[in-house]
Image (cartoon, rainbow, N blue to C red; front, side):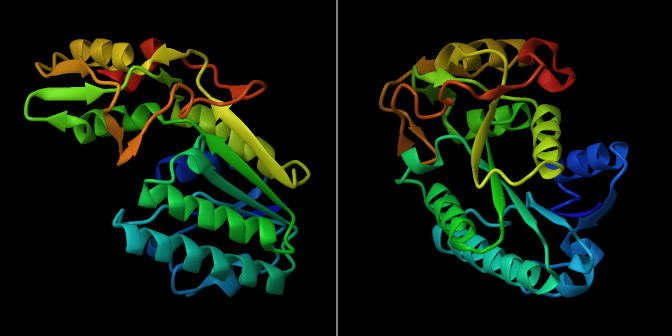
Length: 247
């Protein structure tokens, strides 16, 4: 089966391409560097010719509110239009657990807009909601840093390895469309402030982690369960303590 992975050279995309190849599928890693640009539409018709499934794990190069909204709206509309023309039977998209619970964030508003386009399209779809990746933990700490202090809310946090996300995306891609969503998370749940306190200590990072119930997460105030999945989520296998990139 031919499967096109849009964003196929990125963190999750490259892992998904590898996993689908291991499963015996014909996989196209589509990205601007391979001449396929979902934002402009360049190369889409050629890349999607004969494809049964399109997996979209692309991300905006800019996180500025207007730019990220434009990226997800335009690239998703271009993809869905090209898929309809090519007769693609399954659109798979990667999104984020808690997206609809973070309306103060321009990035998450853009992800909501992306999902609305997918749900409103005639293309059968599956949306994979993942929690925060282990690979982004340092970036989250940096975004919460004020001088030598990292301010983190004491809410639930359940990060997941990129490999486990890619495995879930690949599995969904080769199955029948869900016409809905699944959630993917790590195998362990933490208090977010405790997690980052231990993580920074493990890095030998001198910054102090301060528990702050009002600390914002990329512009949004967090409730207890904003960042964690509901019951029944697919859980990854790799614990953060066992992840090779943790230090």
